[in-house]
Length: 315
Ligand SMILES: [Zn+2]
Image (tube, rainbow, N blue to C red; front, side, top):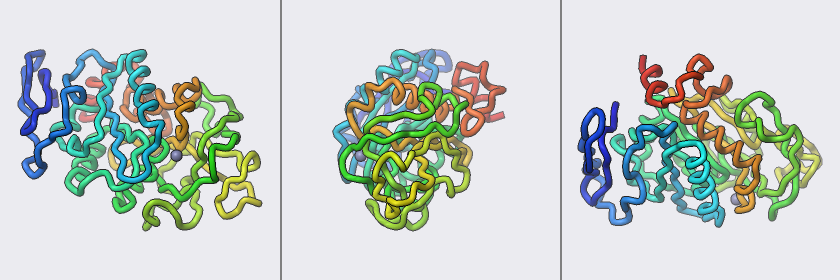
């Protein structure tokens, strides 16, 4: 569906501002959602037809708030400038309607926490993924929406706990061919807050439960994992260096999911390895960068225009 025209949000509806190919379409918000005093024209403004992809960065927190959220957003915006993405941002769950989400190829959960979406907003996001779109989760995106079973499967696991502080540890590159790991060495020593995970099924809200290997979730393809011999992981079996994925992707419910557990610290987003990892993850999730494991097929590699990819997916 062509979104059509420039548009902006007002209190009662999104209003077309101009004309372009295909004309202008009025977008009406779901009537059950109240007025949006927090929405401004700085987010979700106009569709850039020449952009490689359109991304919505969602940074709402209902629990712990990471001080790296603005840093991560700025990094994604800079990547968008470099790579010709349209990047819009919001911390308002009311953006999760069919009419608004349809403008985007990927929604990035930027260290969200807690219960950030209503049931109605969740249903809209499920339809968005089912329409062939993408989800990118950064760090505490796994510490989000414990009561939404569909989301648990989308991400692949929930947050369990982490060892104190930001120790130095080694990340191992498991998938050496995926675009999202090309800027990362096979053995990557860095500092971060290192998550352990719990099952996506019946999780303990806000963390807890039994240590879980996300590799055991249906569809999960592991990209990066921890070398547990390089730090005290506090996963309940510190004496055993067991399998510990930290970034993975999966095809899910008609769409694509990409998750990285990295990125607690502000400093992370200045690292070239993190920036290339996140940039490729966003493009894979958006469906504009082929990934054998979790993205569109390589047959679509020549289709740089995301709208062409969209058309091909509908066929
Ligand atoms: Zn954190």
